[in-house]
Each structure stands twice: as C-alpha cells, then as structure tokens.
Image (tube, rainbow, N blue to C red; front, side, top):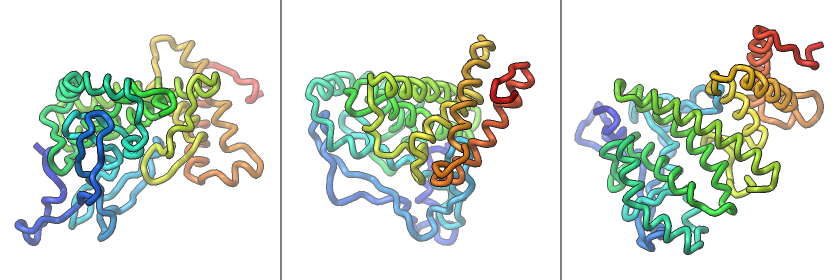
Length: 304
C-alpha cells in the first residue's frame, strides 16, 4: 500500500541506492515511562528535501514533492514514541516528565494504547524508519498519553495541536491510499481539535490550566503564530467543522468569534507586528463569517 512506502526508498536513476530522508541521532533518548532508551529519528533538511509551498487557511505549510525525494512529511518527526512501551510525546517532554504517578499510569495502559492506535492505523511500527502511517500513529499515541499528563504540561493545548495535525495527516493518508476511511477519521480529529482549542482558551481564562507549557503554538512546524493564531483557529474550525444541529448556537458562537478575529487585524501598531499571513487569513475568515451571518439575517452591532 502507498502509505507503507518510505520516500527515502525512491531513486529513479538508481533504484539500488537509498536516498536518506531521516537519520538517527547518536545520543539516545531515555523514556521516562519505562526507563529504556531508544534512538531519536530526525529529518534531514538540506539538499532540496523540503520545498515550501502554499500556506493553507488552517495555517498548514504544504511541501512540494521533489523529483529526487518525492513527497515528504516533516511534521511526523516532531513527535517521539518509545518503541518499548509506546508512550509518545513532543520531544522536549521526554526530558521533563518526572511525575511518578503519571509514568506508572502510562506504563500500565500501554497495551490499551497499542490496541486503540492499531484499530485506526493498522500495522504501524515504531521499529523502522517512519512512514506516513507510522507518523500518524505516533501522534495518536501522543494524544492518548497527554490525556493523562499533569496540568503543568499544558496538555489541553497540546491535544488541540495534535488533533489538528492528525486531521492533516489523515487527509494525506486518504490521498495516498483512498477508500480506507481516512477522510472520515480526519473529520473526527478536526472536531476534536476544535473542542480542545476552545477548552484550552477557557482553561487559560479561568486559570484552570495555563497554555504556557507549549513551546510553539504552531500549528505547523514552520512558524509560531502565537496566541492570536489559537484564537484564529478557534474561529476557523468553528466555521468549517462546528456542529450544525443547533444552528442558533452555531450562529451565536460565530458572532463572538467574528469580534475576536476582528481584533487580530484591527488598526494600530499592534497589528503591524503580526505575521502577514495570519492577518490575511483573519480578514478572509472575518468576511466569510460576516457573509454567513448576513445570509442568516443576523445583524451585528458592528455592522450598523
């Protein structure tokens, strides 16, 4: 199947020569859960492997396939997964997780994680160079692990980012290997991402859980769009993937997000310091929400 192929195996000129997409670092990683070590796989970035393409409205950076290396997925290398106990985190959290009760719980639930992930991403492996499928599986393992992480790790905002990336990777899998329901799974992760982003903002506002424990708001690996990016994504995901059963509630949420998004690109010096792509996409989203509300005969005070 296409999603089991390693892009590093592609070489049209000499099929016997392996082209490297990734490498294993010399320093080994110690898993805080099972205390065993393993090698960290990292992506090589030079030589035309990463050809930056367009930026989507979801702030995802597309990478163009190269003739030499084919399609690459840099995102899959930012999550580490222990091949012994299948615990997975953002790489920096391997060094900082010291809570013994959390580690014991993750260790005792490793078989449940394996089974859950294998149901969606069958035949994934943590003992080979990562494929697209393996990368998606690592993200799902991480999602299940962060559900048990203490609040000082800002697990909610990390779950939001993980779910959004999982949606992207599932769409990639659907393109590589259609008719395996990955498009349906992607929609589920989009909605989970919306839920966790909204919950993260609520927890931050009410001081239940800080979002400071995440080093890069992303949402992709190429740029950090910060807190404004989180607000924008909440509005965008609500607009694109929010529930439609209670239409009145949907319109109310969109009306609130319209005001929040307007503050992102509002006049003044503060807006000039914000990333241009975020400002552009925020304006486009503002216009889309305005049109939807207008078509639904919802009049905002700001429109009067």
